[in-house]
Length: 117
Image (cartoon, rainbow, N blue to C red):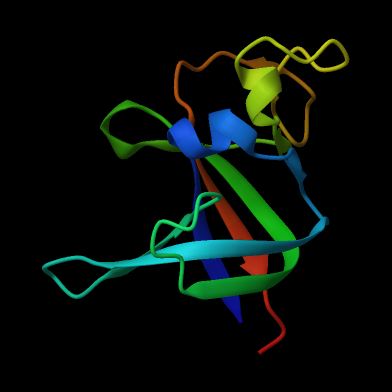
């Protein structure tokens, strides 16, 4: 089963690790139920009501742009790289098939995890 986890914002920028396609990951998530019944899982590093754990292999990653548009990317840089504090990673986003550098001001990402359920 594929589960989409929202990664980003201040929690990821604070202490989030890099996430790449095909990585095996475990996310602690806060579950949000929207008024329309849609369920969102948001990564949490600070025990802010995290009650759902998602474990599996990353099958897809998208950056979320203005207006909710999405674009596939190769990896989510670590939070320190996104803030410019990682000497080994400049935090750039990259197209997964062409290697083209993608310019985005967004710090929001959608990570699809294949859970095996």
